[in-house]
Every structure is written in C-alpha cells, then in structure tokens.
Image (cartoon, rainbow, N blue to C red; front, side, top):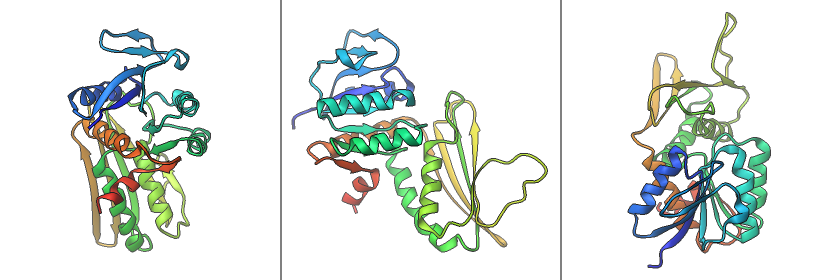
Length: 255
C-alpha cells in the first residue's frame, strides 16, 4: 500500500505534536512538512510559517492549527487541489462557511472532534434527545486542560447542535449561569465549561427529569484518539470527489 503524504498544520501545537507522533508510528502515512504561525526548521521535516514557500509532495492536509489560520490553510488546499481534514476549533461562523464553500473545489472532512467514540456518542445523543427533550431538562458539561483557549469546546457545541437539530427546539442555548435571576426556562440547553490541569477532554450530557436522571458521557484519556481519528479521516478522503464530509460519513461506512 502506497503511503499517504501528509502536511500537518499547527505542527508545533499540542495536537500537532501528537499527530506527528502517530504519523511516525504508522505504516500508512508519511509526514512531508508542517505549517505553524511560528517558524522552526527541524532536521526531519520543514515547518513553514507561510504557505507560499511549501513545495513538498502532499496528498492531504490535516489542520489542527490556531483558528486564525484556518482560512489560510483552506485557501492553500484550494490553490493546490488538496483534500483537507479540518480539525480546528473555535472557528467563527464566517470561517465555517468559508470551509463549506471550499468543498465546492476540494474534498473536505470537517469535524469539531475526531474521536470515533465521541462521534458515536453524538449519534446516541441525537436518539436520546428525540425521546427525552419534551419532558427532561438538558445540561452539557465539558472539561479540558488549563491551556485550552476556546470555550465552550467544539465538541460541546457539536452535541448542542445535534440536540437542537434532532428536536423541535424552542428554547435558548445558554452558556453557564451567574446571578440571582437564573431560573431555568423550559426547553433551554445549558453548556458549562471546566478548565484545569491536564484533562484531555470530558463531555457529559445530563437529561434531568422528574425523579430520574440519565447521564451519557465520554472521557478522552489522551489526545491520541483525536489524532488517530483525523488519520482515519485522511485515509477516507483520499480519492473522494469534491464535497463536504463529516465523521458521520466515516462512521456510516462501518455500520
């Protein structure tokens, strides 16, 4: 099997470094170069701070970069006709729309969480919400390490969007609570963010009914699960026609 040549965007970040380790341990992928806002040249491969200087052989780009670089990476992929695995969180609505528009010209896999388990959890949450939304209050709690910049997490947003799209949503999406007038309104979905230590990522959806509580959760024990999921997405997208794909497309293959 021919190895897939990858460029890693956000190569100097925590996720980028984890992804590089997974690539180096894999028999199916080859790391050709990296991109990062910082400039650093390593002996094994080049890391660029500008896409204009990249000339290595690349089959696919995996983007775990800072959200401010997402548009630059998408433009680079469009210019060079490269499939993109977009894993950056904290994107604005305009940036999300730009990546969707990019899929008219290239194949794009976009997910706010590349853990296979989280995406299965997302499907379970969709089914549970349809059964419980009318009679249960829904709270989402997410916890991450103390260096994570954005809140709530992209995964918490993903879960909230899934619930909203699965039901006749008539409430509001609320972020945390503070003050003396915080009584819960029927139909609301509330998201809480915890930051501390080295927590890789924990997400819990709590369905609170009268005299009963249902909790559905996922805990990431390392960042490696997100890196492995992005590699699964890269293998999936090679050879695909232009279009916008998600982790659900990958999961559906295995059903």
